[in-house]
Amino acid sequence: MIKDREKLAKYLAAWQGVGLDYNAFDCARFAAGWAVECGRPDPLDMYRKWYSKRQALRIIKDNGGRLLEAVTVTFGQYRELNELSWGAVACQDAPPFDALGILDGSRVVCLSIYGGFRHAPRAQFAQGWNM
Image (tube, rainbow, N blue to C red; front, side):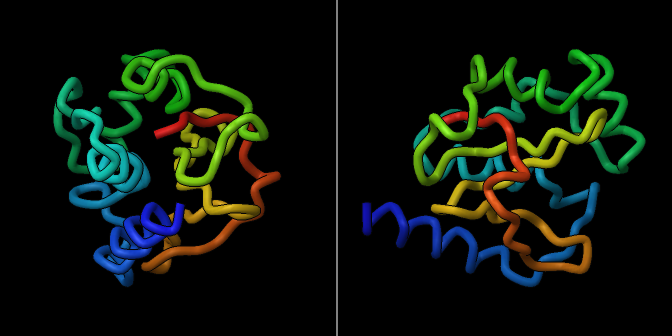
């Protein structure tokens, strides 16, 4: 567990201060990068590239209408967040553009629109996937 927390700390340190940018780094890329770090294949390989929020929304619409549904295609059926453990990818229920983060105990590490990360209460997220 400590080794995994160190892995997450290193992952977060690599992205600390990077601003939200639909051309290069957004919550989908953040969660996908963590999945790859945890040994999964890159879940974004099955989607065309996007370079704007509009393009991202189009991909989501084409894959079920919600980010939750698009992520379920790549990670499998989601589970309730209270059933998941530390390091899970969490999904905030805010249709149509749900937000993804990484579960870290009683909070979820998310991207901040101002750059870097913010920590949201676990209760703000409903579903997720173990990595």
